[in-house]
Structure formats: C-alpha cells, structure tokens
Length: 142
Length: 402
Image 1 (cartoon, rainbow over the protein chains, first blue to last red):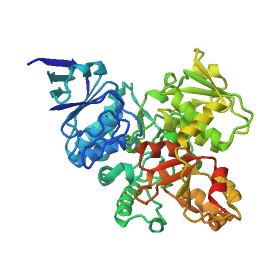
Image 2 (image 1 turned 60 degrees about the vertical axis):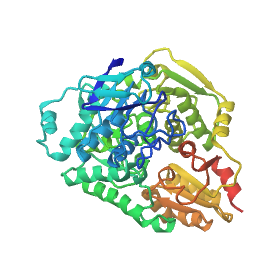
Image 3 (image 1 turned 45 degrees about the vertical axis):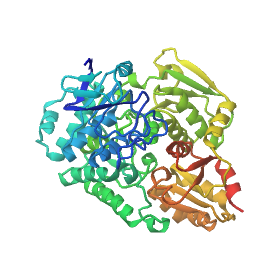
Image 4 (image 1 turned 180 degrees about the vertical axis):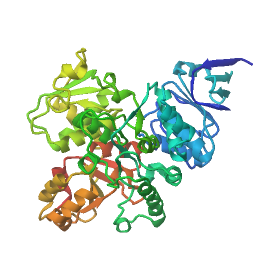
C-alpha cells in the first residue's frame, strides 16, 4: 500500500485519523453545515450532501460569516464534528472553534494549514488519513 | 507571537480562569496569523444572536461569565435574534426566546453595553481616529476602518469576547499600516446617487475587490454617514471587505496616493450598467412580497424619519407585513418625536434589538421578502430558503401601500 505524506503547519495540536473528505472550494460551517447531523448544506459547496462527522476535512480556505466558529463549535457539541481539519490558508474560524471546543467540551479538533489544494488530487476521497498536527504531518493511504 | 511577562501570567491562569480561556484563544489566533504582539484596544463589539451562536454559544458565554470574566474595555453588543421587548407579538416560540435571553443575561454579567445594535457607532461606541478596536459584525468593521479611521480586524465569534475580556488583540492586518494599503481603486462619475445606488455600489465594490483594500473616488458631496453605513455593509456582504478608503472622508486618506502608499493600483470605472446589474442579480423574483424588511444594518432615527414621511397617510395592503429594524436607541427617539406613531398608523411595525438577517424568517412563515438592503438580499438568497426582492424604499412603499 502506498502512502502520501504532506507537511504543513499545525495550528491546533493533536492526533486524529479518519476517512478523507475533500472540498476544492472555499468552505464555511456558517449556514453551510447542519450541526445536528454534520451534513454539508451549503448550496455552493462541491461536497454538499456529504457528512463531515469523523472525517478528516480538507478545504483550501474559509469564507463568509465570522460566526462560522460558533457553527463549528455547535457541530462539535452535537457530536458531529470532523476528526481533523486540513486547509491551505489559515481559517481562523476553525482555530477559534477548536480552542473553544477543547475548553468547553474537552474535545479539541486538530487543525493543520499550509497544505496546498494541489495535494488533494493525490488523496482519494474516503481513504484513511492520519493527522499529527504537532509535527504538521498529514499522511494518506493510497 | 511575543508575550510580555504580564501576558504570560494571564496565559498561565494567574489572572483567573476567564482571562486564561481568553488568552488561549487570542494566542492561538496570533500564532496562526503570525502576529508580532498583543496590543491594547479601546473598545470591542461582540455578537449576540442565538440563530448563529446556538447552544454552544450560550455555553461559551456562560463559561466566561461564571468563571469571573468581566469586559476590560467598553464593549457594545450586536442585535439578538428576537425583539427583546415585543418578541411574543412577532410569533417567536418561547423556547427559542429563552435561549436568546440566556445569551443576553451572560452579556449583562460580563458588563456589556447592551445596545443590541449592529450600528454601535451610531449608538454608544465612539472610538476615535487611529485607535485600535476589536469589533465583530462586518459592516461595523468597515465603518470603523473607513469612516471613523480607527483600526479593526473583522473579529470572529468567540475571539470577540476574548478580546473584550482582555482589552487586547493580536496586531496584524488592519492594525498595521501595510494591511490598510489600497491595491484597487473604483471611480464613480455620477452627480447624485439614490439610496439604493449606494447599496448597489457597495455590493459591486465588494464583489470586485475580493480581499483587497480598495479606494472609492468620486462620491457626491451629498453622501451621508447613513449612505456610507449601507455602502460598507453591502460591500462586506459581497466579499471579504474590511476597509474602503473614501478620499476626503476617510481620516488619513485625502488622496488615492495616500491610500495606496504611492503604489500603482488597478483602476475600475463604475458605470450605471454595473449598478443595474447588481440590482438585477439581487431582485430575484416577480412575486409579491409577504414581508418588507428595512434596516439591515439598523436604521438611524433620521432614516426612520424619512420613512415616516414616505408612509404618512398610506396604508399597507393586506397580505404584506413591513418591519423596520432599528436600535433600541433610535426606537426610543422615534417614539418621543411622533415618528413611530406615523409609521405605525400605516400598518408598518418598528422592531428593535434584532435584525432581519439573524431572525428566523423562514420559521416565521415568510416566503418572499422585499428590501432595499443588498446585504440582506445577499445573505438570505444564499441560504436558499426565502426568495428576495430588491428595490428602493420609495418603490417598495409605492408597491405595498394603497
């Protein structure tokens, strides 16, 4: 089995794994993910209808309302959060949401940035991904 | 990010749990964006609507309040998802209201200025030129940077409360000269712009500039601060806009060259056709509205007065409701001056402490909403549940009254 390895910058530390869920478009939890199910509802998203729960969620950038951190936190509260978030640019909503999740619900979600969207083509949707954000490492099984 | 010894102590918990939690948030943000340091702020503006903050937001606010948090700087509070005084008469379910009131109570304990308004700069939060602030609410941030000449990033939910509790924010982006430099210039050549034109213009600027800071030249001298409020709000709804330099208005930016730091910028001439295209984009149906919603962002007392003049002696047609959204402050003023009674005699209602884009319109049964707010039209239509109509307030009043 081949394994692709990518190096980014860990913004929220932790280790996590899960099947890959990849969006090539800017992503938001605000009105974009239903916190009570984890399903992506954003009509402009290329992964609309997919469920983020337990997945390693990849997207290039955040977008839209600054309430996205609260929507993300609510998704954590309801037990439907992704296991890790991997982005190209820095999405402050993911960073802030994850700090609050650790503090209030004792559940941090590792966040890694700096992994360019070109890399996504080397990762098959649903393939197993391991994230070690302390090292900034993202490893995907081929 | 470099922390001084006092800030290190706060992060270790020596200033209490609430400030430690706040430091966890701001240091992670500072590190993520590569900020050099934490700097003092003069004021904060924080989000309060249950529709986006959810139960998790209630938990966070209560955590801050119960662990001894107290705002360190004057902190104004954004609108709620319900009219806090008259919510029952607007059909809001009791359970929903109770959640919203828990959020509101937490802000009371934290020491927030409970103006419940998205236009704090017209109500109770008056920073001056050059001061650093930490404001949430994108339209208020654009106004702060572009009209007041103070310095604010667009602060994310949760971070807003953290900055308010600490009286500090990481220095990056809009707080630094480099981040405020314009790299695109828009020019309008009209002698006069209608109230709708200002909003369409803002929307065009927001769509066209992306994350770039822009300059907008050639606004007519008749432009009001209310016009700039709506222009900036429209821009920030259409794209990730945090600042627009208006030469002659924005402090420290008398000319295009001053705004761009002397660098060459892309120049865009805005035509009547550009504004007409925005209007066509946002006016999405021919259907008759079941709700007219005006005041996103909140109407000032002056704007309520203008609407009273338009509505005087007219009656709303059956089947259409009209809600005018404003701050509690402007609401009180309208009540004292007779403006409110003129408006209400037409069948329209003034609602305060909430706003249309953060209230449960769909759950309240509205299918087609008409507005002159490009911001409301953009937000609601992107959610895809309620259909939007977009026209000037004069056209709207003519259409829905008899």
